[in-house]
Image (cartoon, rainbow, N blue to C red):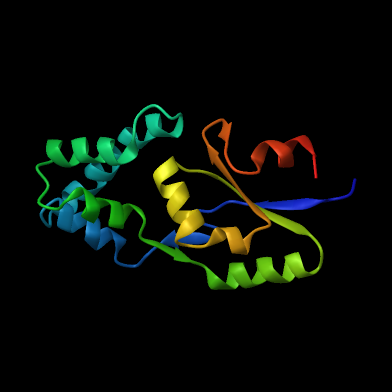
Length: 151
């Protein structure tokens, strides 16, 4: 069997939360350390339907902020949501692998807002041959062609 491409996961492989992300969450809940875990679980629960295209994540996030009586804005929360640090050593490795002729693609489950941030702001379109951004079971971008084996 000949390997034709390598798929990289995003969270925990190519990227990780920024060092100040936890502080950003804490600021949204008024500085209460013990509330941050429950707050994040509520955000993740609101995110889940957005993976399937049911709902809009910024709107769902707005509802979570209202339930928690947060002092910060939706923009503050979205900045925390997209507080991502790219692992430059992995990006350099991907560049070397691509230079050897091996195709490298991003395969990750993200809701559309964060997926667009990763593609447009983190510039993953230049890091990978074609980003394969999975939103639950739906494929975006080059996904269908790649997984069907089409060039």
